[in-house]
Image 1 (spheres, helix red, strand yellow):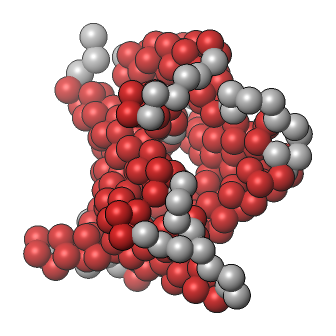
Image 2: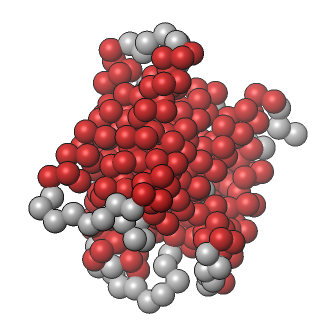
Image 3: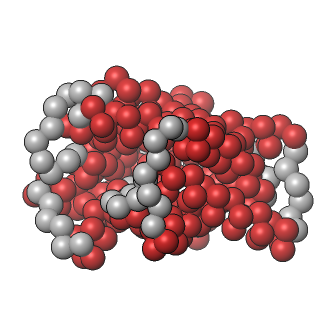
Length: 280
């Protein structure tokens, strides 16, 4: 039976996955008609304003200079990884999405196992099930090719770098850490989005959806930081990385999109992994 102390990081991790999964669905929906780069930049701006407002309202202690730099590094890596990921998808979706998703979760998990020792047998079984679930859920439904795999691997390493760097903020305020993380990613993504010669449209409704997605995304980051402060990084990363399951389910419910049987198997594997990781 898992103790309350064990369930706290699980709860924060799953809440982060809930925010990230809903954010991805909202941002993806907004990008259907509007410029995806502008949508991404606006979502980052919305998330930054939300976290800054909350930090100024609640007034937690400012993080140390070291924590600020780690948070900024995490934001920069996350922004670069996202751009690389989009580039990989444009070259071929067959392996790009699952490679990036699995590497982003596996590298921090392996690093934690090396530095803090492996989890128990239940935890390892949960990690394997979660990894299988992430791979199956991230696979595209249509036919794909192997293009973009190298760039996808770089994106996965970037996502892993985000997790590792944001975990180094220690016990600093999750709100301020999210603020400094979002400053770096906003500057990077905003500069790229606004410096392009050709820009697509940004419809008013999609702009609202982008801001909503950004607020959810940065909230997920703050929840992830809190989860890491209360639990092991490997468990927190793996559970938080189950967010594609929610994105798929939202697309099925709201957009009536059908998905292949392997996605159903992936969702079941992800659900089965949660109690195994929680009980380790």
